[in-house]
Length: 444
Image (cartoon, rainbow, N blue to C red; front, top):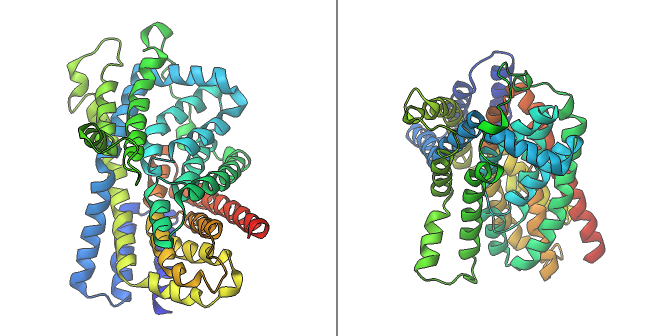
């Protein structure tokens, strides 16, 4: 109980310090991490190690991705490439359907790609589309984030669902089928939330820019502008396919090379190099510390340190043992059936921030409970994995790196992030959980 109380106090501190006290999120997250660790009775040496490890691992996993994504975004915006993509997309979707288009793109992209990487890569496109169509950026950003989140947590080959399926012995094909169906409902719920709730919020990034849209003749063609986005996505998707247990692309040198090129950091760096070809008149000064690359680095630095601090807070929570406390508390409540994995995963997700950790940890907790709950069949195991995924969406807040990626790349304040990203993930997760419960009532 002491750990849970400390967690509540820590989260409240982050919310109040950043919203009311205007404290920088980086400082608020680090203070909360150390404060929680001390209150939880962690040895001071282990506490410092947890903070350093969490900060370093998070930046190590996503730092280059953010940097490369910022470079791609900067070159797309400054070269006019984003406007060309926006114009082409609007001809397909129509001006009133931009948030739906972003939700659909996110739903597809995040099947093989981490939601953080997907948002970094696609946010420049969402920003350009919102400006081109006159649609609030908040609606586009939230629709994209919820579309990404839906498949990130429920559809293999994303590592979280794959790991949970492996622990529970679930058939991966069934998990994909059920996950895509439930994920579609979740993405649509996220889109509705984006249109009805987020569409009313004005972000600082919604303020019209003084600079006019570039002339058509000075911008790259639509295929050329899409190349820095599509190449990394294609490489990451192919890598995921190559690394499936069945090894559909074989195990030769080509598969090894593809596994290397498909690493998110490598793929996005290749996309960044391609973006250097976008300007109509290339100048080497664009690659300098004062040029376009320098501007991208400056913008990325703030996002990286905040994301790293969120990772530090999450690592302290993980190492404190709070996951075991919450899991054991909920284990005895077996009457909730298929909703039990949702509750456990949601509690773990809210407590420590990582959807992947919540997925794998909950799967381990659920394994001995499958027989007592009557969930041993192939379809039942697949639905349990998807139910865990639904729970692992709730709730994305200050200890979740995706929260900071979405808020920082969208120009949201922390308060707006709680109202849009946190509440949106709750709505989307509840829709997914309700869908799983209804499906289980029919097929189990």
